[in-house]
Image (cartoon, rainbow, N blue to C red):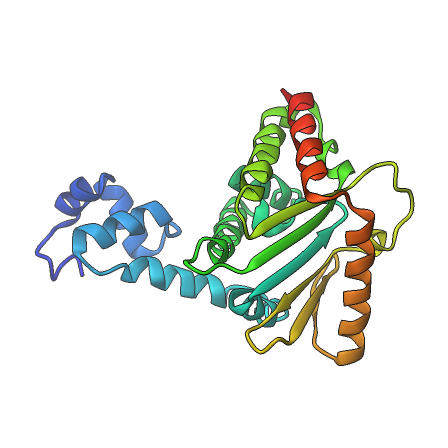
Amino acid sequence: MRLAAGLNQEDFGRQVHYSASMVSSVETGTRPFDRQFLSRADEVLNSGGLLVSLLRIMEKEGQPSWFRPWLEAERAARQLRCFHPGLVPALLQTENYARAVIRCDDLLSDDEVERKVAARMDRQAVLDQPDPPQLIAVIDEAILHRTDEGYRGLMSRQIDHLVAMTERPQISVHVIPRLIGVHVGMSGPFALARGLDGGWVGTLESQLAGTTIDSEGDLASLLARWESVRNDALPRRQSMELLKEAVTSWT
């Protein structure tokens, strides 16, 4: 595409605001794709967003096989329900929070971390489409306080982001307060997606993989667990107040 546009690497690099060596490294495959670079390349080459679209396809295909059915259900959902006892749910994470969480796996290289972060951020596009799904998330209050001083700024921005997201009419976040002791959600995270046909799909995650749930009996159990954790959580307004108090504690 660059050659068809009559540009050498230096001229092209100047227009996309990257060095000729960066252009060469990307073209020869010695440097991983950079989303900002490809976005600028799409503009310069008038490709109609082709390169960024191809990157999204590559990232989708790079997802583990066990995750793809859920990813499709998430993208087609009209309603989403998610609970996590230990982390902010992926669809509501800031980029820096996601990066810090993913970096906890010290077996991943820097490039693998960045690819996973980019894929996670792309998943969030489902909330920005013209007719987004309704999202209800339940988190444990401990999530808002489980970090050390080195992550003070990161955590305050993450909670600010949660507050901002809950100002959208289709998104609500409910917090299970610390005064609630043992509850059914402590068994682990799960999520549910309801499609256009009214049917539900669920997912369970473990340390190594995940499982897509689509059998009637298992879905009934997950929906019952959802009702349980939702009932243990604070109402929307009280949850918002708790989130704002948590921001204050980090600033």
